[in-house]
Length: 334
Ligand SMILES: Cc1cc2nc3c(=O)[nH]c(=O)nc-3n(C[C@H](O)[C@H](O)[C@H](O)COP(=O)(O)O)c2cc1C
Ligand SMILES: CC(C)CC(=O)C(=O)O
Image (tube, rainbow, N blue to C red; front, side, top):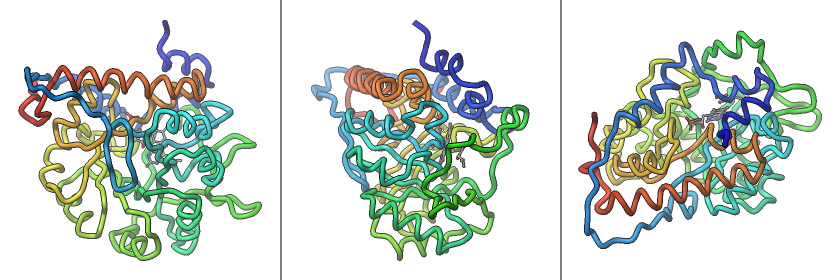
């Protein structure tokens, strides 16, 4: 049976498949995210007498499995139902969907699916506009605000340059940036700083999450500025090439944060064994990006559900087989 990625590759226009699959520069960070998991090995514990419990409680709510839907842009490029299909699948599998600010369905409509949603934000230089977008997300019922911090500028992605992929085709738009007939372009600004996070803390009651942390000092600073959670991520290798693999960065960031707030990791999580490895190295949960897109492109809601179901089944079995306690002592580097 062909993989969902193979089906997506066949079905999508090349420029769209490449946008989803690709990354910055030589794509070494894209590949390294997966390769780093492949370098890790497990040393299971036996006779622990503990049944696996997949449920996880986070500042933005509970999920029945420690696999959350990462924020990814432009779901209607993958499937006509777009983010509605993804949200319905997340709701059916009882996990959290983090909605990209660059979703092609407005946050209010996605919220009508009843899914537990967090809203991902690129802070815009126009802070009044940013605050209006945050206000919309909060009013729609989003339970956390995920501020992406790894994008002071947009990464250089050779596949997109080669394909001439710059923007959404006619008829699709970033609906969370729409005000009346006007849809603003997403702006990136190197001037976004911790001060903007402080301001956001004042204007919203949603817990603040900082996504895209790769250095332990920044993880400490995020906690100092009131972050309720820290997301270790190199943006799936799409921003800066040659960033270390997310899973390799996790332990020092987990150490830096300690018990202060939960830490998640994303980038290259493809199997239940990856999920369990991430939990053992200090993550409370993981985020999954491209596999969700491939499921969506191949089979819409059903495909996303199947991806989440597979993660659940594999994680449950891996957790039982790795045993307890699930800590760093069960991970080996080869
Ligand atoms: C097509 C695509 C679009 C993305 N869009 C966003 C986005 O809008 N906001 C964001 O914070 N991260 C975005 N990301 C990064 C993901 O949230 C996540 O960090 C990454 O995809 C995880 O790696 P994985 O794809 O290997 O699972 C995007 C990733 C992909 C692949
Ligand atoms: C629309 C983009 C800003 C989405 C993104 O973060 C990405 O393509 O990696």
